[in-house]
Image: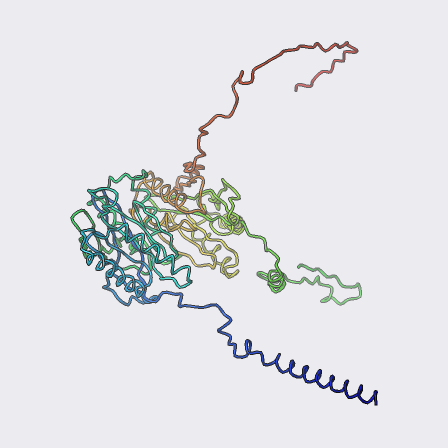
Length: 274
Length: 286
């Protein structure tokens, strides 16, 4: 009697134990957390991280009464000179110009946003115009933010203008912003290949003293013309036609300049390779 | 490896000839797999000494000017502040070297010896083109693994010549050239300043400015400018031509003047001594 009830009791317990084990086993293999996991859920987010249509270098100079920027009018599609008549300089309001090296689509995107900024500023109707320093600050923030999201705007920008924030008369302003968010002001700025080819020439010619702006507008134009010639000689993605933007107290003037194709008399001295 | 095998006395006449194992030509790549495996396991391969350089040359009316900086880098450190990058090939030709320092040194040394033997053989002054051929044929044979990027210049009976040689063996003959990491800065200077048929002084100034542009704008180049002016009359080796980066003058003086520390007390104690013996030894003054 006793052993039989004990036997039944144990059997019952064992059955429950077995059913629990089976239940647990089933549950471990069907845990919903790991059921429908894809590979893409585990890898980090990835955005397109290479430029498509690109612009090459920019050269910017601070003169005594204006700022000069020169950019050629070429949009390269890799090694193809695809768009030979694009403007890589935009006017933002009446006192600022922004020039771009890098992806042209990102430039058009930022250009729309900048136009919107100017429009909003005008709509406030308070006679306070957005200036180059404000644009510089805003672009720096935007580009750095996009870098932190690992989704950069592939742009190296040069912001130039007539800045009235530090003095009522106004002073010429020239600055640089990188695709990673590096930002600084200087009296001469170069981006792209010009940093290697043109910057040494500028460092030799321009005075080494900070805040000294003794370069006249005419000498600045001559210097830029020389530098664009050197770029055409030695940069594979350069073009002989360029835009020269001059921003002064009066406003912005953008000229179309056909660079002199250079001096090729040296060709007479080159025969063979041996 | 050269192995000379001699046969036993009973060997036949043909067998008695000393057999020589010819050396395997070119580089041996047997250990590449082993090196790859070691690197994957965390072994840090040693970094070769590079010259991270600005070298340049320009032809003027009657000769050639070669210029070079004097910094040798080993990774991110300056290994040699004042190394010699303009190497002697012959009395009438010199060669500037960029790339791996050992490769440029040994290649120019080897070709210098070959040129000497060649000129003794022919009984004539060696031509720059001969040196160029020897250099490019050797470098091409090694497929670019000898990292020597050279600027070769000299004057022979046919006139002044200036060439560049790349590691893989390609050459260019030009009126003005620059090589190395600072070559873009130097080339920009040439593109704005070069005129055909310059005088010697103009050419020296131009090349010196080109090297200075490299020194000031490139981190791999530095220290001084060396120049080498070659004409049919001879060679002027100017080392250093210009000290572009001079060590700054000390602004402050950290030596203490006499009397900075006040003397509180002076005590003189005589040391008592006795003369024990006197020995005289003559010094040889010949």
